Image (cartoon, each protein chain N blue to C red):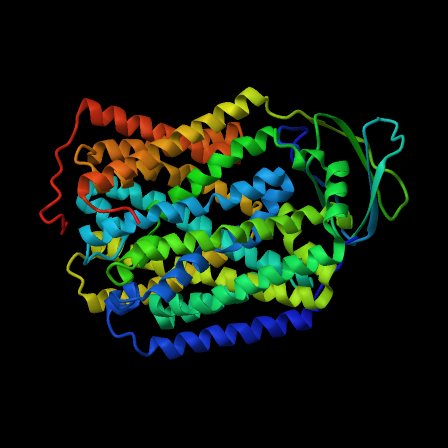
Length: 114
Length: 472
């Protein structure tokens, strides 16, 4: 996996699958895999998980030999909202400066905006 | 489970047929190219219809047809809507193109402007940034070709990438910017019709409610309007798009190529027509949970969904649409980057006495060299499309203020512009690695603004735009 702490709710799970065999991937919020979500995968060696909320998620995969892999624990911990809004506000200010500068520039040079 | 929508034979036939069509078009139109003006700026007399089409088609690229679904799959509805904010770059470039044409009626490249306005040091910094971006975009386009072929048919990534790259190099070589713009017109029609047909077929076959329920249950953050990374991404993508368009020679060569008075209308209309394309393309990704499609890599989600839902027919449509979108951008970038190297590196640095005929011949060799270098860099599939593209955001966003202030205000100086570009790029890259790809352009743009403003207040310049505002 590319990270064990996902701050944007997505990550990539990957495994060795030299013969492109069918595999079963399980995801669960419990380490004991009670009522897991399950995907049947064929001919691939990675899986992109997206859209998860904050929490801890467990993964394991079963290949052609019928044995489960070691369990992988992934913590999804989204960026804090104040940080998100700080970047949003920064973007908004930059955009406004951009538009105002363009307007003033056109006014000064006498070229009318389209 | 995964399945391929097309057989390898069908995919090969489409690849060969469309490659032959584009190459034939290039050879036919290229017969009229006689001078550097013809090759680099299409004789400077492109009319409105072709101008709108080329502005739109060039901006509809792997970014739109494959990265928009990827970003929707990763960042949800904000990713989809945020991507459509990329149109703002085109809209804001509309007034800029008028100013560029009036200041530099005889110029060939964006580098010409930076050199004349800011001097050699800032010009070289700008060229490094431009080449980093151009290669990033070229590689992403080559990669997208390989990913498309692999996802839809199972043919190898390397084969698909090589064929699409080879085709675009050959027809750009024969036709120059004239054929790039002409093919863009045909490709625009294919892209718009194809994307609309695909979206209608998918919604009709699944239904909006199952799509909504599946996303809400399995991927709740994709519908959450307070998704932090997506909120951070919104303006980052807008700024990235503005940086791409403001600095890139792809858009400057068009400003020089369009007939007088056409540029502003063309960019405005091109931007407006472009807005719905990423929304429609991105929406396709939201159907993946309802269809229970396992997605190996996020940038494969668009072709995988279409292939899964629509089978061979959908596979053929999406294959042709994305092939057209890729070609329309790849050819533009090859033409614009080769112009930049010819004019700013070859004639600007290596052989200052080179005639237009020398440059015309050199430009063709550079197109081949660029194609070869891109092919070599695409061979190892190093990252996903969005990550690669937004890596270049740290570079291009730093050029926004030097371009904008340089075009309109006397106080911006060469040293300030160079310092703004260097510091913006460096801190943008720090943000890319420390926080995520979705803030690199924002940080770069903010730092660049602070530096150029602070420098401008401390040591303002007195640049004289010659009367009647022509630079030579």
